[in-house]
Length: 145
Image (cartoon, rainbow, N blue to C red; front, side, top):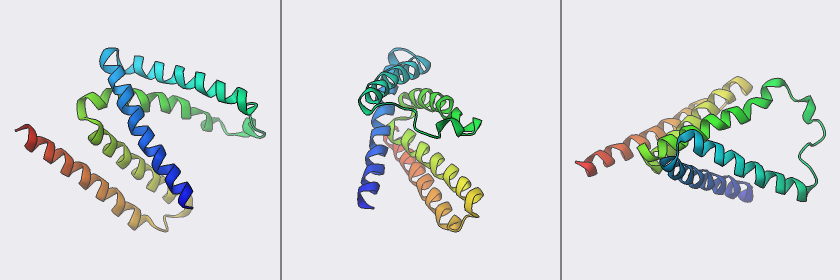
C-alpha cells in the first residue's frame, strides 16, 4: 500500500510541475497553444511507450460506454485552464484550488457510488484544503502590500 501512496504522491508532484511548465509556455504563446503542445508531445511519448509495450488497445476497451471516452476533451480544458491560471495565481494557489476541486468532485462521486460512508470526513478534508488555499491567498496579499 505504501508504494501505491508514494506513486499517487509523485503523480501529484508531476501534475504541479506539468502545470508550471505549461503555464510558462502559455506566457509565450496562449493557454490553448500550450494545451496543444502538451497533448501533442504527450501523444508522441504515449505512442513510443505503446510501441515498446506492444499496443494501447487492451481487451474490452471497445465495450466502454460512450461517456468514458470524453476524458480527453476534459483533459484539454484542464490543461488549458491550468496554463492560463498558473501565471495569474501562481503554482501554489492554482494547485490548491485544483486539489480542492478534485477532492470535492471525488466526494460527490463517492456519494453517488456508495452512499458516502465517509462523506463527513471527506467534506472536512475539502474544507481544510480550502482553508489552506484561503490562508495562502491571505499571506500573498499581506506580502504584496
